[in-house]
Image (cartoon, rainbow, N blue to C red):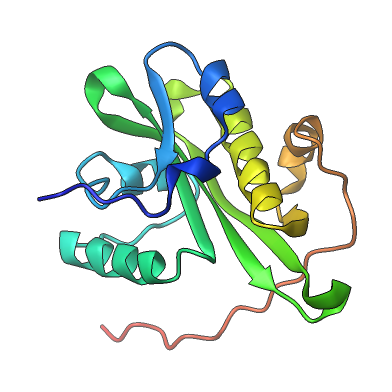
Amino acid sequence: MTDISLFESHLLSPEVQSQLPPGYTLRALRSNDYERGFLKVLEVLTEVGGHTKQEFTDQFNYMKKHNHEYFTITITEDSKDKVVAVGTIMVERKFVHKNGKVGHIEDIAVDGNQQGKKLGLRIIQALKYIGANTGCYKVILDCSEKNIPFYEKCGFKQKEVEMAWYVPTPKARL
């Protein structure tokens, strides 16, 4: 099966690629990244949900059809053909700022065995590059308090307050 990229490679920062450790590659999410452990890396963040290959493929195909809005990137360890870091920027079209665009960074994750190699920093830098090159007037993200110092090192400033409302779901019946 052909390995399809989520979006065109011209949106990937050559500078970020040059700053990765030897043997690591920055790239767009690919259709075969299910086998490369993409979802396993996300498990460092939260419950991912036991996707089947088909469920992953359906989500990938949806994002591919909307690849002017969804930009998920990975860093792979080439020798193992394994995804070791991930992140997404979603581009929102607004009426404010004369139909401006805002980039929303989500789901930054680095495999626990790969931490300390600045892969998280490189993911953020690459996503900021995508935001700038897709015409965003700002790039924003939400994070836990413990992660504020990391994101400040990435050039972000603390601003406003995050609020959340979780849709109530019925409890499973036993």
